[in-house]
Length: 118
Length: 111
Image (cartoon, rainbow over all chains, first blue to last red; front, top):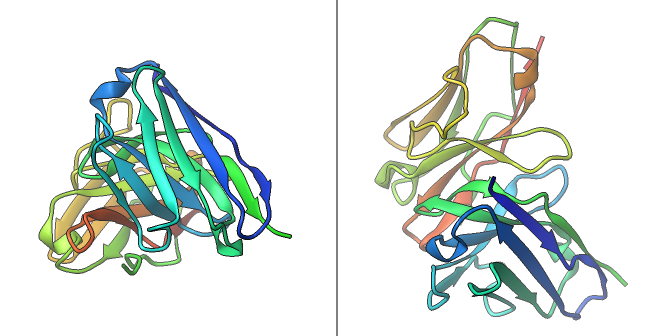
């Protein structure tokens, strides 16, 4: 069974940093592109990043470009999102998701809440 | 990148069919066959129900079907059931950024 579990969310002050992790199991993690998607409760999802199978290629949405960095450790079946210079508008539930082709996501984790507030 | 446009709400009676539209541009829906639809129940993560415009993942009911014409994609739910009451989001690969753009979301109500 494919499982994705995010962790590392919490309350952080504006301008601060946070690192999210996503533990993957039930599939061969190293064979799949992975995504980070966020969603403000009550609003639609927003794609923010993807990473290729060996971690050499990443892409980011305009709203996080230059502030967020996605990486992965295939030996530990884990995806990461390093977030810096956080703003109030980054407050959202952050999901990791597995790619099924051309940025479409088939499996999603339950999400982790990030709150940016003083 | 602007979000794809969906109607805010659609409703139908049990057993009926409903269709949700998703309008984009030539850089996303109109230019590629990489359109997906996800179902989201309150407090849950989205669940993929359609990808590549019209393909269903294993385990997804054949009551869900997808199509595309020009810059508009559509999701049809036939034989509407109470469990179909949820939010539905379309999404598409976009060549303008090499990323992905989601729709504004449609709330489906079963009367």
